[in-house]
Image: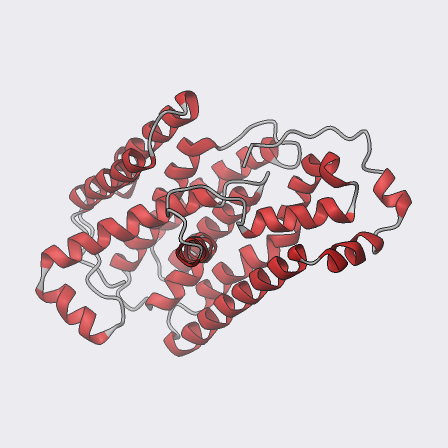
Length: 318
C-alpha cells in the first residue's frame, strides 16, 4: 500500500478514530440491540475519521490497472480505504470466539508490524505497535485459558481498526513495502472473513447472519468429540487456540521477513491461503463424517478424557 504521506500523529489517529468503533461495540455488548448495519456504518465513520486525521488514503494495491484508477480518482481511493478499513474491523470481531484466539492474532500482528517498522527505521510506528502488543498481552492473561475477561465487540472492533491503520501508516511511511507482505501480516482475520463470505454466498445465507461454521468453532467441536462431549466445551474452547496458533502466527512473521520481496511474499500468501482453505475443508468433512468422529474420539485414551472432568472454565458465547 503506497499511500499519501501521513502528516498527523499516529496516536491521535488511532485513539480518536478507534473510539468510534469502541463505543458502538461497547453499546452492543451492553444492550445487544445494535444492528449489524449500524455497526458497519460506525466502522465506516471511524475509517473516515482516520482518513481525515491522517490525511491518508490507499492509492496502490500492486494491481496495475487498479493502481491507475486509484491514482487518478481520489474518490475511488477514498471509498476503497473506507471499505477495507470497515471490513478488517469486522473481520477481527469474527475471530473473537475462543479464549485467547483474538489475543494471539492481535499480539502476533502488532508484533509483526513493530518488527517491520524497526527494519525500516519507523520508531514511532514501532513504539505504537509494541504498546498495542503489550496491552493485548496483559488482557490475554485474564482471557486465556479460563476466560475471566472478554474482549467484547468494543475491544475487538478497536483492536481490528487500530491494527489496520497501523499497517496503513507503516505503508505510507515506507513506500517500498509490498502489498502481499501487508496482507500476510494482517492474514488471519482476512482469511476468516473471506471464508465466511464465500460460505454464506454458497449457502445463500444473509452475510450478516451469524453461524457456527467458523474454523475455530469446528476445531472446538472436534476437541469436544475427542474428549468428553459438550461437557468439555470450556476446556475445548481454550485448547482450540493452541491448535490454531501456528496458522495464526506464521503468516505475520512471514510478512515481516518479506516486506521488500514481492515475489516471495505473493507465493507465501498464496500458500497460506491454500493451507487455510485445505484445513477448513478437511475439518468440515471430518466433522460431517460419523465414522471420522468415532475414529477421532478413540485416539484419546479414557484416562485422559476423564482428567478433564471437574475443570471449570468460562467461555464467551459464540
